[in-house]
Image (tube, rainbow over the protein chains, first blue to last red):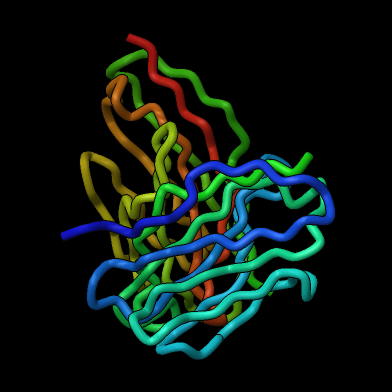
Length: 115
Length: 110
């Protein structure tokens, strides 16, 4: 059974640009969550989608957005990049969502560097 | 709101030593508690979990007991191996998200 796949694994952008990250969940999983991991702030929740609906959102500015498609694949977008957006962005999938079991399966992450 | 506090690292141990990582939480109600592990260059993996008070989660020789009276979920392993070197995160589930501790880096020397 394939795990959670995130693309791209590494990317470098400059301030002001935008970026789109992709996540393919484990087959059959309907929930996708996104987390930002930085050395200073640790792991912070961005948002969770379940069956194409955003179910919860963390405390991030509107520059951070996401969506989920009918096949459960998800994308997150960050517009007008800032230096502080440099981070490892982790996607996690689950069968029913964090609210039900809390057991998430994480991808290896997309490491974004903003110059 | 919900929050998790972990003992700060890094922690360096010799093989076969005893490992304890302290974790305490603040939450309304009785959340489910988790330990996740992140090996170098990889994403997080669920190590163990406990869903109610006095539950003991265990996996790969690691154990943690959900203590409601002390709001704690300390991780322990009796004899660590070099392959246990990783970052360990304590987490709780609430409000449709996981709240993570800061993580504890553990290095086991041969």
